[in-house]
Image 1 (spheres, rainbow, N blue to C red):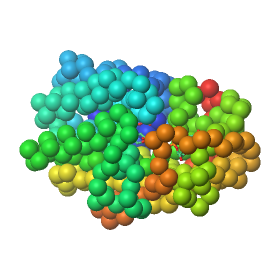
Image 2 (image 1 turned 60 degrees about the horizontal axis):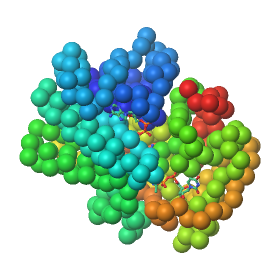
Image 3 (image 1 turned 135 degrees about the vertical axis):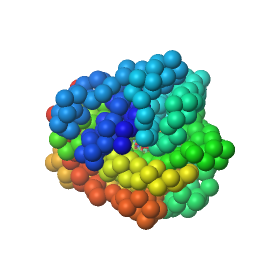
Length: 338
Ligand code: NAD
Ligand code: UD1
């Protein structure tokens, strides 16, 4: 299939490109490089054995540019839509920028797509839409919860917008993928997560402590109602997540209408379990200090991934050791990122 990949130069997008090529698809990337480097695309080309990845440096809010791309490229079978801003703390400080980029950008993209006759989209949503879940493991039927920050709101609102569009026009096929916590990197160590500034998320912080860029990990709270008191999350290897997108194309092919899937492993690990797994997998110590809880955090969040297994034939294959080993390989081969 010929696929428009917005945000394809980013962390999850770059890994998905490798899997799309491996499955015989033809991706075309649109990215404004606001949170990524074009080097990731050079490395994807090297891993996929292609000369270069077709790439448009373009913003999804720029209607003329998106229209021109669609005009020039001709028919797309589907769009995988990763482009968006994703830093929770920044979204609290800059809500307008988040609503403009994520919601404004997606509205423009959807409008351009329908005018060019492409009504198939796979959207990067997040487990954050469940808020603080009433029960775990979380199934897709769990009611959506209260999002404590504008980033989460954009994901939740975009889910509603695309669902309403699909309801009004059944020619649309919309697949909402709710990611749990993606970590890890391609096993080659050539592509990986490249956060700007101080990492917000656990694994990039751990790898930066391990490489000596930061002194110690702050563990945000050890008084949660979890086995060791630290927060429990469903970490998923980014390559498994990437393959989930290739499998989601099957839902598009069978004209799913609206479909929602959790992409997680179904297993939760606490912060201290992740630290321990990292030390076991890499032999590198990660000094840490218990700190107060981070505002907005919840105790426990992990998926029931059985719907994606039943309907898409997808399940996560990699375990926590693989995730730690591959995160570390990427960090140690690229100490300063790309
Ligand atoms: P990322 O920042 O590495 O990738 C996003 C890409 O989108 C970047 O390359 C950025 O330059 C591009 N982009 C942003 N705004 C754009 C715009 N207006 N026009 C064109 N390109 C634009 O992030 P990621 O971790 O790869 O996440 C991809 C998607 O998955 C995002 O939508 C994110 O919200 C969602 N998501 C990520 C996680 C996670 O933990 N990484 C979890 C749940 C959902
Ligand atoms: C965060 C976002 C969520 C987003 C997801 C993926 C918040 C509140 N939620 O989820 O909206 O979809 O990232 O991008 O930011 N931790 C530490 N020390 C650190 C970093 C994290 O102890 O330096 C702990 C956290 O308290 C949590 C766990 O590690 O218990 C995972 O944190 P993180 O990687 O930030 O992911 P989430 O909070 O699950």
